[in-house]
Length: 322
Image (cartoon, rainbow, N blue to C red; front, side, top):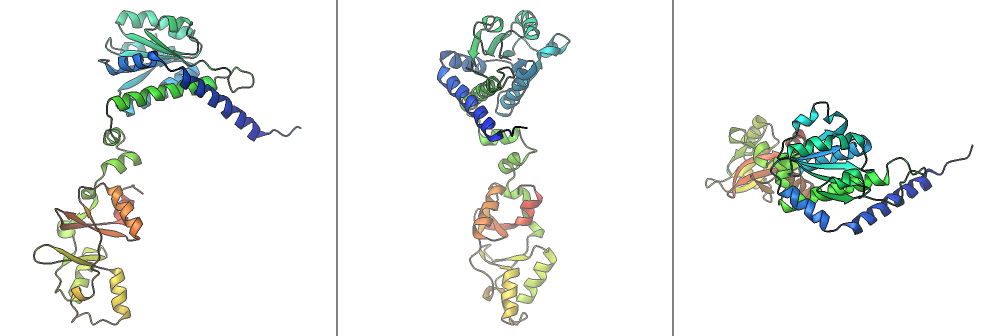
């Protein structure tokens, strides 16, 4: 049995698909601009339509549209004439994906879509195909060859179609000034959404749960405050609500090593004066970065430069941010 060279096969595939993408990039012209403008000025949603392998591409591109500020849904051409076409509104625009441009299931839906008054755009490998000719605007994803050694299985052509769909989505995203905050709103359940939505004030310990003492508090009483609040820290705050320092487990270990008398020692003499803070309106992910860069496990939370709470690495981990 001949040993297969998998690396050689993989490199050949990637190189062929790369050449297809390079050809696609060079082929972009006014039609791409016109299509983007039509999609930007639509009144309804973007309906991506496809079947088979091109249907999978159309479905993915539709999801990308929706998650980047251009509401969209996918319509399987094989199901369209069996009731699903009823979901299409006359204000929706149709974006067809078909490499051959001759998919009969799609061709059969075109008269009904046109009767609705929908504008029809297409992405095909052949600009002279039936679907291309019946489209208001057509973009070509013609490739010189498929990566499949039989030149049969859609490979380079589907990669080109996916890349072109992503290019359209990004062009619309930029034109709509779609922000990271907008992106997070459509991904609230994922880690990306959490990183862009959750703020310090959503996770911090504040109010009666915020351990704090005054500078003249005896160390023994400060330890009781730390124990009662269970956060392993106490903020040292003067009568004008200014943060003077913090006392942590690390400071306690140093006191024990020095055999400090806990009843007669004021917290101000053994606290850490250099304490890191973060504003309550900051994103929680910023607290992660700050703690990691300074190799600490908690921060004092401030609002208008006044201490109002504390946030720990443990809180950030429980939120699912890390």
